[in-house]
Image (cartoon, rainbow over all chains, first blue to last red; front, side, top):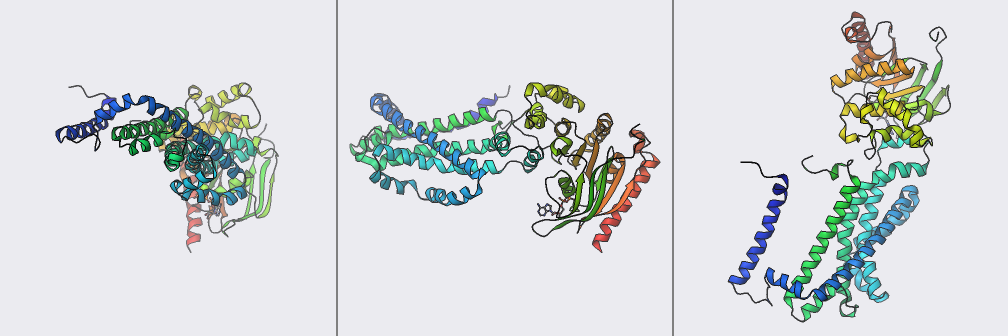
Length: 263
Length: 258
Ligand SMILES: Nc1ncnc2c1ncn2[C@@H]1O[C@H](COP(=O)(O)OP(=O)(O)OP(=O)(O)O)[C@@H](O)[C@H]1O
Ligand SMILES: [Mg+2]
């Protein structure tokens, strides 16, 4: 017997587990005659997704738009501040406490307050930004500070300016750390956006996916709630996968984390 | 002709002391001349200040006492530094790693290419310019590191236990390569090692150090007439040098324990 190809061994088992779970769910709903307003079957969820696409897809697009705008802002802000931290220690000492306060305060608790001061659309954006900002900042700052000691000495021996040391040594050293922060930040931006949409509730402009899920809940349209939930999960997975692919592409040949398990 | 002139002193250390911020007396009263063309080995137990001496010579740290004079000014151009680990930039190819010192001097890739390629072929890696560090063996990475230190043709090569992490076969080969490179380039080498045998094989002079506080306890001149090759490794002259160095090292460590 020829051995199974690599990809089958790698992706086969998790795919089987997923399928088995879905099949079990489908069987349970059918055999027990569970009504769809209690628990819809996976197939019904899929059908609802197709039927309600005119409502759900624009909502998904809206939420993703906010997520990516917030993520982009968090990258600019986080990397920018980390660069300032790396160049001037006193800035780090002055600003780090503020960043930590923002980090440890749960976004769910900040959202209602933001909604009082800001337009709902802006509040959602700010929430998503705050969620993504800290992991990007702290990872990048850590990466900038953890360049190899001996390489730093070598740059000093060759009289490299601070600017060139940053460009040629500290930034590349920080890249794997930054990409790790970006992957976490991507997921958190989505969560931040969803949380803020939920907090905005009926007061919101009602365009995002979380709002549609709530709306479906009020109408007891359980299948549509599940369909919306499935879309959020898929979006989260897609964001993580895209950022992982970006990371693997950027780190290419040089970093351990970019290498497959079989090496 | 060069041998006839009095050996020129490249770096002179007079009464050098170094106390770190936490109070560690890493060096005390170190007098040492580094003469042009020599292969000087610093041999001593861990913590006796060997790395500290190299850092002071390279200007990466300032002595806390004594006078250190150099016969040259542009440290970046005249000193090559090789660390215990290859310390290559993992995101850069072998070529780009060797290119670094030239790049920091403001040279373009194009103008630097001949020098970089020459340095790579000096260490036998002409065919691996495009390889990334993680695609190279430990010995090959160390060769890239040596090529990087040589690419500016420095007067003085400082090597801090460069082969300590390699297996014996790779180490023997790099020992021979290093001696050949020194001959070809006429460089002066200060070499730090824990190994009595390595110091006896490579050096024209061995300086033995003791710790707490770091200081020089003995100096052993080595007759350089015999060619360094496999035959030398089993010769009586080599055995005698090993014995003297081992004795001096034992005294240095023993004195510390009393
Ligand atoms: N930056 C530092 N701050 C404080 N103490 C230091 C520092 N660097 C070195 N030391 C101390 O100075 C002494 C000499 O250190 P050094 O690294 O020069 O020794 P070494 O001979 O190179 O040792 P090894 O063979 O282990 O590399 C040691 O006791 C060490 O702990
Ligand atoms: Mg050392």
